[in-house]
Each structure stands twice: as structure tokens, then as C-alpha cells.
Image (cartoon, rainbow, N blue to C red):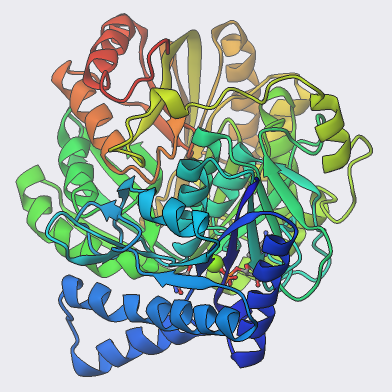
Length: 599
Ligand code: ADP
Ligand code: ASP
Ligand code: MG
């Protein structure tokens, strides 16, 4: 008998009629001969209402009590859904996170799942029940109620599907699938038939709120196919699977994080270990930093800029208060009126002009790019919040995301091509059952013979990045990483990019032309550098990855020249001289997280 996990989000259980409709969907699946586990979120906007209530009572509600409070939303829903099923003549039992044995760590409001005991669920299913499990919540070792983070019911659902070995995991929501960008922001967005785990993980982490990013970590690790579909119709939605929709399209989707904040630590002494102090303090608060850029300035001092979600800004600033003087930095500045606009696609690494297409689109829309970072599957830009919507539209248009790529495959095609071939190997057997959401690394590797070019004094105005990377592209130079820092204090910025080291002379020549054309200050280059790559699943959300990386490199006295992060990779550019030693050191430091057989 097949087992199906069906998850219903807040809008899908927002009122009595919707609760009945959800109950009917589950009963129908059961009548078709499936064992059915439902995962249900709080009704409508109930979680927001509870959060507001807490805010009205206290400006600093204790984290434990917050989780105690917000978890009640899901408890209301599961009981009502179970009652609705009962009223419709089928059998159902509702269970809280504690009752499904959802054990988590004790980081309230961001708890990670450690283990799930399936016996009770299995027994109830055997007895003919539909099991209605509360999403978003778990319990820690002390039986405190914890929650997984906003949108976390998706993670409950995919985690349950993983440990129960479900045949399908259906996410019922208020859109009929995953779109090329949030259809509420851009009506021209296109629903995709298929999207790969890697792309969805990155998009979710960069702002595509349709799926909780950590749910995709589970799906990828356990190879669970996810079907995102509308709770208001029976139409097929989007399949999130290992395969991509197109083998050629450079970009599969665009995302925006509207409420981002930029933080800059000014005048950090440019010696190894200083960034470690800054980032480890923030990581200890489980705050994910993104878009890390370091600008080496004058007199051996560097400015370190990075972004955090606006909701994490106050904690970040507070954390830095203590660190700034310890590190010997000058000051901290921030901007809380910025948004991050990103494009994602697994095919982009093989193609040229992807970055320049994005920058040109932004330039033509009059958008000034404040920061740029790239990784193998994404390009992120930081833009003024007032221009974020226009920026997203421009980028979506530039990559023709509203049009289906010519070689797009449907899920049916992909499935039939899979044929009898066993599905992509699941990592399940290699994972520890008591550390389900532990960091999983797939490799640590080194790319030697790289070079870096940095342009200083780049005018901070629209169109410069576009012109620069168009010129470099026209010269036939293949650029790997790109980083544009924030130097806003003096109205100019610096841009660095990496290339193969055989392209260095050509790049310097082209760079000099660019410098002259735009009146930039100077060009600087570095050869004998290597890119060290840590690959895995959910690297940005596992905030300690950065800390370990920074610590190991600092211990070896290695300066990180550039850094690029995604959910799948962290890339650090360092001097080749110490690169082999660094790789060995990192393999040791990450040994516990490296899958057996990983390289
Ligand atoms: P639920 O309550 O069912 O979990 P969410 O509000 O969390 O629903 O997620 C659904 C919403 O996600 C949609 O209404 C849509 O506005 C938003 N969204 C953001 N990015 C995307 C995207 N790329 N594709 C589809 N929906 C998206
Ligand atoms: N109710 C929780 C929230 O609103 C969890 C969820 O809906 O996934 O964030
Ligand atoms: Mg959601």
C-alpha cells in the first residue's frame, strides 16, 4: 500500500469550508487505497496573530515562551481537521510534534530536527486512521516545545515523508505550483512543471517563500519527490525532483528577499582571524549571513560587509557591539533599506554573459547595484528597497523567464526517461537516524591556477557593472566568481573577479581599458591563487560551516581573498601556496559531516 504525505498550509485550512475540503482530499486519497499522513499549518494568519500578541505583552518575549505560544496555532488546526474527517465518516487521529516524536535541538524558533519516531504513526495507520500531524513544531530533550522557523511545516512534511519512506509528498498551498518568481509580485511569472532540488533549495533560501528551504534539504538528502499544487483544484502542479526542467536555460528562476539589511564592519585589521571573530559571533546566534564581501583598504585595514535578514539586524548589531573593540575595528554601519535580487540556475556555470545580462537589465531599469556576489548556481545583487520590484521585473524579463525554454521537459517525460533505472541514490542509509538535519558535505575540492583581478574606485552608479562585464565577455574572457563590495562611505566601490590564470594578461589589459573609460582609480591583480570549494547540502543555513572554514584558514595564517556562498557550495579564494594544506585541514575539521566516499 502506498503512503502519501499531504501538507496543507495556512490558507488551505483558513476556515471551516477549507478545513472540510482538506479533509475530503485526504479521505479521497485513503479511499484510493493509500495510507495518508496529513501535516497541517496554523489556520490562515494565526501565527502572525500570535506573534503580534506576544509583542503586545512584551518587547522581549523569552524564546521558549514564544515557541510555546506559536505552536498552539498548529494544535488548533490538527484537532479541527481530525474532527472534520471524523464528521465525514472516516477515522483520524491528530498528533502534536511531541506525539509524533519529533525531537529537535533546543534553538527555539529555529530548531533543527534530530529524529522522528515512526512507530506511533505506523500503528495508527495500520488501524485505518488518517494521521493528522502538527507542522512546524517539535520537542527538545527536556520536552520543551520548539518550532522550526517560519514556514517550517513544509519541513515537517518532507521530514515525515523521508523517514516514513513515503511514495509521494504533496504540498497543498494557495498557488498551483512553483513559479519562475513569486506570481504575486510578477503576474507574468510562469509556472514550471519541474524544478531541481538544487535550484529550489537556492531559490527558497533567496526568498521564494513557496517552500521552506530546509524542507528541500531533506528532499534532496532522501530523494523525496515533492509535488507542489493548489489546494483549491485538482490540477497537477510542480514536481521538485533531482532533474532540471531544461538542460540549456541559464536561469530557471528569480527571487527577491525584500527585507534585507547590509552591515559593514569598518577598519578591521587585515590579518587572519579577524573575520573569524566577526562571523563566529554572529553564527553562534544561528543567524545566516549572506553576500560576504571584504574590501582591502588602506593601511592594512579592511571593511567587511555582509547581509542578514532585516529581522536579524538588531541581534546582529548587538552581537557586534562586543566584537568590534575586541577585533580592533573602527565602527559598524548598516543600511536596513535594501533588498536582495537573485537569479538561480544550475546551467549558468557553463555559460558566459549570464552575469552581464543581469547587470545590463538592472542598469537599463536605472537600478544601482550596491553589492554583488556569485556562486556556481546563483548571482545575487543588493539593491535599494524602493527599486527592488522594478529590479526583479527587469531581471525576469531579461532572461525571458515568462517563456518556457525550447527544451523544457514535462514531469511525465522525465519520469518515463527514468524508466526502470533506479532513482538517484538516496543518502538515507548513510545518514544517522539521530541527526536528520545534521550538516551533510559531499566534498572538499581545490581548483588551482586561478587569478584575481580587482578594480578599485569603481563609480557607485547604475550601468558600470553591466558595461564592465559586457566588455570582459566581448573580449572572450570567462569569469568565474564576481564580488562587488560596498564602499558607499566614499561613493565608490571595488569589483573583483576570478579567471583562469592563463587569462590574466588579457584580463589586465581589458581591465585597464575599463579603468580608463570610467575613471576608476586603479587595477590590481593576484596570481597563484586557488579556489577551495566545500560542497554539501544547506551550507548557508548551517551557520557553523563558515565558522569552521574561517577558523581552519585562520589557524594556518591564510587570508581569504574572496568568498562566495550558496546552499550547495562555499568557495573561498586563497593563495595557492597554502591551498593543499588548507584542503587537508578542512577535510579533517569537517570529517564528521563528510559522507563516506566523499572527495
Ligand atoms: P502556505 O501557507 O501554503 O505554506 P505560503 O504563503 O508559505 O503558503 O507559500 C505560498 C506563497 O508563496 C504563494 O502565495 C506565493 O505568493 C509565494 N511565492 C513566493 N515565491 C514563489 C514562487 N517562486 N512560486 C510560487 N509561489 C511563490
Ligand atoms: N504556521 C507556521 C508559520 O506561519 C508554519 C507554517 O505555516 O509552515 O510560519
Ligand atoms: Mg509556507
